[in-house]
Image (cartoon, rainbow, N blue to C red; front, top):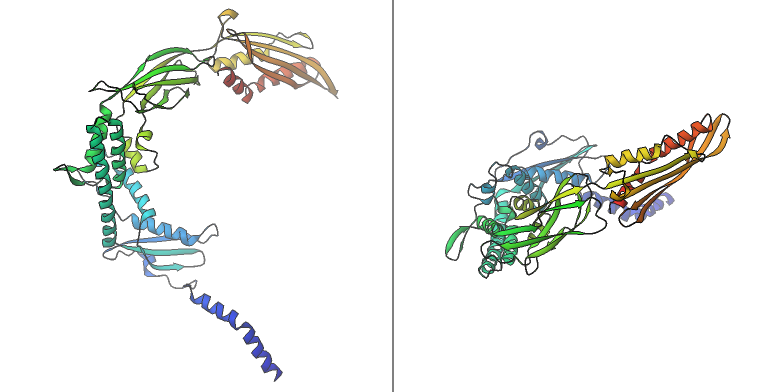
Length: 464
């Protein structure tokens, strides 16, 4: 009797736990490992009226294998959706040598995989190490969704394009460019299509007209610089070099007020302030603050700032197309003079003259490689490098003699007479079988240290 009552107590106590496990087991589909693989794993199915995608992932514990398989399946599904480029579309006109077509299709398919809607899970299968999933998408439903999205895009683009036309008629051309770019952005996924709309009583290819309107305004803009060539020392003595840029409309001869411009090195490198906006007179002062290359001839380009006009955007399609626009630009040629150095040294060993001059010779070699010239006349130099070093005897450990080198490399601006940099050389060790040899070793070790980041820091500082 006690035994029966004990069993009853056990079942009552664990009833809800057992019920929970049974319900949990029914809430998801489990696939017994080792069961027979479905036919769709042997040969991908292509049912009529559907796009299909099969995705696979490894159950290796490194991530959510179900999500990975789903992503792969959708990418496989989207790969069946082909982009057809109309012969009258703007993309076809731009893509004369087919350089855009393949890239455009890749971008469209990548974005479609992220945006695709109403796909269906058909089946899934797994074993101990792998997981597969099978999705499909109705071609008819996909077409309906895309047509609706396209209609909305065309409505937005047409509205922006009309606003651009109105602004252009009022000679507000920079504002018109902004509207045209918004119209182009609205149509970026349909650049391969021939989209006809009726506007002002005439039928037009919308994206073609938008692109032509943008290029038409850009072609009518002139960008000039004064002076177009300048001579400057690579060491600019911390003074900004300015170049005047002017933007105007060719047909009217009026300033392109408010036009955004961008400045950047085309050849060589350095620091130039990048972003500008033309004032009411169409002018901007381009600020060049540093030359970073030793090339004798360099150049800075000033052109219409596409990013500012079009608005910052990460869209690969939009960037692909806008890069094909011909932008008004001008170039400033920089004739860069090398800094001239006057070098002196006082290198000593234990207080006596050192005939080898290892430090100053290494310094001269490194400066020459970095684009500096040298003179024996201090008054004709831009910079005066003065090297002062000495070694001192340290300890003797068995048969090894230790020497320390101390010193400083000072750099002075000859014109201003100001010390602009000092590099301290502190207790650099040398080893040898006697003090003379250990002193030479200390000098060699010091010369080697000049080739590291310390010399780069020196050069960067004195060229400010």
